[in-house]
Amino acid sequence: MAPFTVLHVCMGNICRSPMAERLLDRAVQDRLGTDRLGTHQAGEAGLVRSVSAGTGGWHEGEEMNPPAARQVRSRRGSADGFAARKLRGDFIDEADLILTATADQYDYVVALRPDAASRTFVLGEFGRLMAGIDRAALPPAEAKPDAVYARGTAIVEAAARLRGSDAPLPGDDLDDPWGRGDQTFQRIGDEIEDTTMPLAKLLLP
Image 1: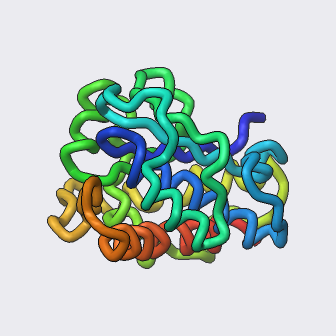
Image 2 (image 1 turned 90 degrees about the vertical axis):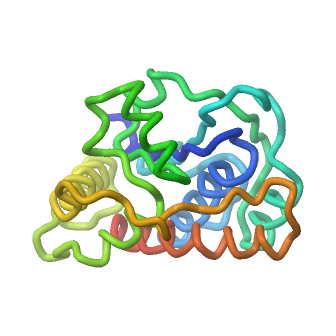
């Protein structure tokens, strides 16, 4: 079985979405009690795969923006081996959960793949909705591929039910930190971890 796959989406795939990709990877490793960086071990173990892409292809193949990489490293994550990608339909098809930096990018994903609407959320929106999920109603949390996949898909379905027809709130968006200072990137990193860390905690034992 393929690992539970989370796709993070922003505009250029060099700031927000790569930070989210690698910080979720770090949170999963922390939850599993591993401390090996740089190769997405949780995904290799068949548990959680964290990937990212951008709605535009201007930076395709580039490394993570330096202040974004500094934030990832300061939080014990790895920026090694990252290369920006332009979002494609098959990336969406492969993902069990899609987290976008903004509502505009949510709209872009859903325009590309309308059937992905129920598993696509603005990052901050998903963080809010997770707080309302009934943990007792989820499948058991076990560090096994089938169990993580079942629990992950149940979390996504529960969040979609809680959302209903409500639109994201303006505060759910992540500001674009491109061209801004380390203080802005630090704030964005904090906001990303407000969702990625609870997700790892909810997903894994």
